[in-house]
Image 1 (tube, rainbow, N blue to C red):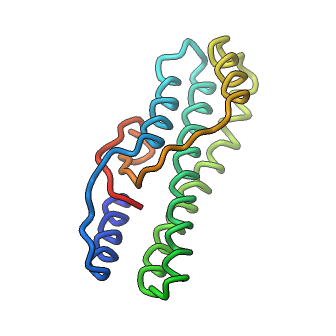
Image 2 (cartoon, rainbow, N blue to C red; image 1 turned 90 degrees about the horizontal axis):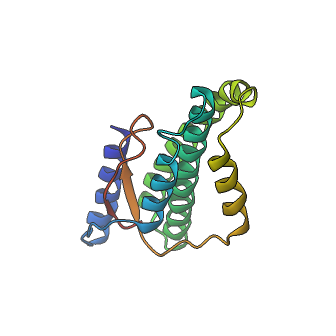
Amino acid sequence: EQTKGHLDRLKQVAEKLGKRLAGHTCAAMKGLIEEGSEWIGEDAAVEVMDAGIIAAAQRVEHYEMAGYGTVQTFAKLLGEKEAAELFALTLNEEKAADKKLSLLAKSINVKAKAEKPPASVKTAVKESAKRPVKIPSGGQREVQGIESNMEAKGSQPE
């Protein structure tokens, strides 16, 4: 429902600016979701998998916050006050979702710490820390809530 509200705001801004939104798939978001989905089916304690899924969901939220923060700043610089306000609403919702995930992570991570993560996850974390981050150009995408965070849909440009 929240994602629908975000899309409605994007449509409002586009309409006000006389632009048409063209849907596409965001490769960066798709990659974040694919990476997060690797936690599903891991041979690990439930708490460890939950901690991994929460971390993946937070990466999605941070990517969204970066996008909405950027377009809010652009809107302000261009004197588009109404658009900036709409983007601020969405940015605040993304921040609130991230805060909820952080609170949830505090309790889950304590439980997960007591468990041993699977070797494949340890290796993946070490390897991903060595690689430079490449974010392809792209737009915003829709994610169906935190519960089904592993399925990306078509998107609109940010």
